[in-house]
Length: 450
Ligand code: DOR
Ligand code: ZN
Image 1 (cartoon, helix red, strand yellow):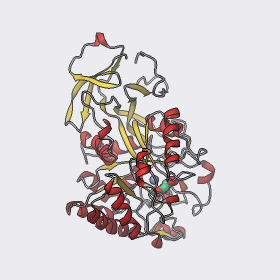
Image 2 (cartoon, helix red, strand yellow):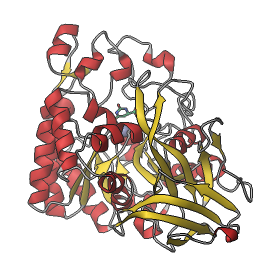
Image 3 (cartoon, helix red, strand yellow):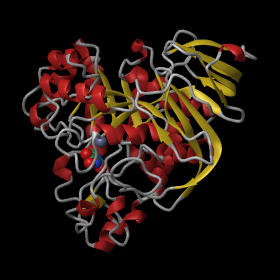
């Protein structure tokens, strides 16, 4: 297999502690060598990465690819195209599809569709209960054997404490992880947005913080007694951050993820009934966003995800109460995180990259498959980032099928300029004068010039 050489990059690999200017040589899909002034004559392809940052391929543990059943919103092909456009080399897809990913044959469908059509690596998250109804546990072992890297009823909470304890006991025995969509539904009947001044002004039913916090409190206790790893999805309230902080301090096996929207936007974005900002859990207040930022900065929140949730334009055009919850995120997340966390001085580049590579890898035990790190011998999944590249978010710029994001029109700085999966360049916008190119793994030309 040909050799690719990435030269003169700032190479950041949090797993090994590397942060230095170096060249990276790639052969047979693996990292062959990292060092200064590697021999260019052996390379079939040379990528000049001067002033750019090279990291392990980004990993998003929370996306909705919508296939099967929601192909008018996104498919595995279009969703993973959006992923590599945003710098992600691996995504974990949620089970709220139609049919639900609650049994081996549906998981096999997803993994085989991914093999045929995906632009990056795809690992399914299985539903925890049949039909995500909260009543009957899935065949956890069979789902894990069929490729599930985690379990979640995302979109819905597991409301019953009894079911949660049973799930954590079983999932813990298998060494897997449970991901919770934290929403006590007895407190959110008919809720459309955060319970606050904006919901009052708009006359909409509110979704209060305590609906999230109560579930995390309860589950932290259950995680502690069962010893099962438990992960809080899309954390949205200041109180939740404090509960996770305390539980981690007490030694509970808890992790939490942030999303770009919960740490940069507030419920004000819903004013004027803007359905692009309708998301579950809802955007809250400035003090919540600030607490999430602080949680990211102090290490309470170790994972930066997207909750990429595509919806069709006509669905989002419905009245606010009826419109579906969710916004896309794969293509804007890195830029938003760079601005909100690194350019603001809250965390360093290696800290940002850890929360987008090795930490999500460990969550889903993908580090055991060689993902999330960039040392010699590791899989050559690589993201090349131009930290200064400015771009404006427009629907034309977006590679996925849907464009439901409140970030449309925003100019941001910092963007992935190439994504490599198994040593192949699957997304390439290295040349600012050319439009972005996509090439599915296994389809790359033997050599190319950049
Ligand atoms: O806003 C959301 N959209 N939150 C969820 O939990 C589910 C997701 C979706 O599937 O659209
Ligand atoms: Zn989700």
